[in-house]
Amino acid sequence: MTAAEKNIPTKTVSIRETIGDGYDEFWRSKKRYVVCKGSRASKKSTTAALKIIVRMMQYPKSHALVVRKTMESLRDSCFAQLRWAIDRLGVSAFWKAKVSPIELEYIPTGQKILFRGLDDPLKVTSIAVQSGYICWGWVEEAYEIDEDAFNRIDESLRGLFSPEDEKNGYYRQWLLTFNPWDSGCWIKGRFFDTPDPDVLSMTTTYMCNEWLSDADRALFERMKRMDPERYKVAGLGEWGVAEGQFFRQWRSDLHVVEPFKIPDGWIRFRSMDWGSAAPYACLWLAVDYDGNLWAYRELYGWGGRPNVGTGETAKQVAAHIIEVEEKGEVHHGILDNACWAKTGVTGPSIAEELNIALHDANLSTFSASSKGRVEMANAIKERLIGSEQEDGSFKPALFVFTNCVHLIRTLPMLAHDKAKPETYDTKGEDHVTDALGYACLSRPWAPTVRRPPKKIDRWERHKHSKARSAWTY
Image 1 (spheres, rainbow, N blue to C red):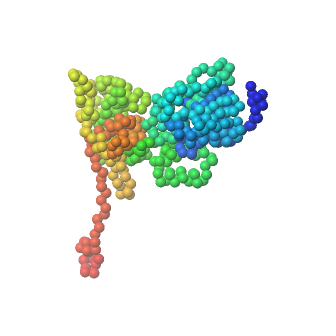
Image 2: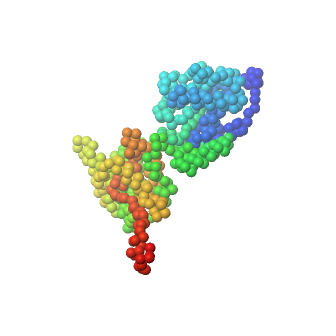
Image 3: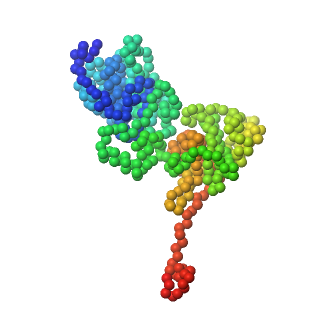
C-alpha cells in the first residue's frame, strides 16, 4: 500500500541539495559493505545518517542497526546525527525518538532504528525484529572495534527476502565510517588492501564539504602549514597511527626514490627477519661510497593480510631468495640472531636450513645480527634524519626504491611500544622494519657534523694581516 493510499502526507525532497557533493558512489552503491574513511568535517557521518533515514522510508519493511564500541558513545554521536538527518529532511512529524533505551521509530510503519554498544555483548547477539528485515547497518568510528566483533554483528544482517520484496529491490548493506587514525587496524587490510566486488571503499576530505565556513577552512590551512603530518590524516584522510607515529622522520618525498642500476662498485648485501605464521621479510641493500644505504629489493612473505604469514618452511623461503638473487650479487647476509636457536631436539635450526640451501646454490650465507631493538630503532632514525647541509637542510642516509612496497607501507605506520616508548610496537607489522634495523646495525653510521665557522678576534686578524701595524685591526 502506498503512502497516498494510507493518507500519509508526502513531501518532495531533493537529495542532491540535501547531501551536497562528493558522495555519489556512497549514496548509490548497493554493495554489502560501503566503507568510508575521511578527514574531519568531511560529511561522512552526516551522509551516513541521511542515507539510513531515506532508505528506511523507501523500504517499508526495513529496519536498521547502529553500532559503536560503547552504548554511551552512541547517544552523543549517531543518535544525535540521525535526529539531525530527520530534521534536515523535514520529516520530523513522522519519527518518534525514545531515549531510554535510545531508539528511533518511523511512525507510519513502525520501522525501528536499533542502537547497540559492544560493551553489552548479550544485547548484540540477540538482535531481532518482529516483522520485516534488518537491512541497514551502520558502524560509526569503526576502527574502535576489532574484526571478530564486526563479524559477530555482521551476522545480524542475514536471511532471505520474500520473492516480492526481492523483486522490489530490497538489499542489505553495512555503512562503516571512521577517521583513519590507525593504519594498522583490520579495516585497511580487509576493505582497502584486498579487492572485493562486494565492497565499496572510499576516502573523503573536508574539501567536499561545501557547507564549511571560511573560518573552518582556515583551520585546515593552518594545520597544513603548522602540522603537515597531522594534516595528512585529519585533513586529507590518509592513514595515520593512533598511538603516535614512531618514525616521524620518515618523508616519502625524501626517502623514496625511483629504481636505478646499482653501480658495480657499491657493496651489496641482504638482511632478513624470519617469520612463518607471521610474515618473513628479506631486504636487499646497497652501500654507496658515502656510506648511505639504498634498499633496492624486498621479499615479503605475507598471506595477503597484515601480519599473516605464508606458513612456509625455511627451505621453501630459501628457494624464493635463490629465485630472485643472482650469483655473486651480494657480499654477505644478515639474519635475526634468534634463528640460530634449535627448533627441536634434533635437526638444524632455521638459520642452518636457510644457509645450507643458499650454500648449495652458491649464494652468500647469513650471519647473526646484532641484538638490541632500541639500538635498531635509533640506527634507523639517524639514517632517516641524515646529515645537516650548509643551507641548514638535512640529507638522509637511507633511501628506498619504490618497488619495496611493504617497507614503504609499514614503516611509517609503526607506533610507539606502550611499555617501551623508546622503541616501536612489536605487535605492529614490524617485519620489514626489523630487517632494515639489522641492516643498519651491521653498517654503523654517524651523521657528519657541520662545524660552525671559526671565530677570530681582532688580535688574531692583526697577527695574520699582511700589513702588520700597531694601528691595524
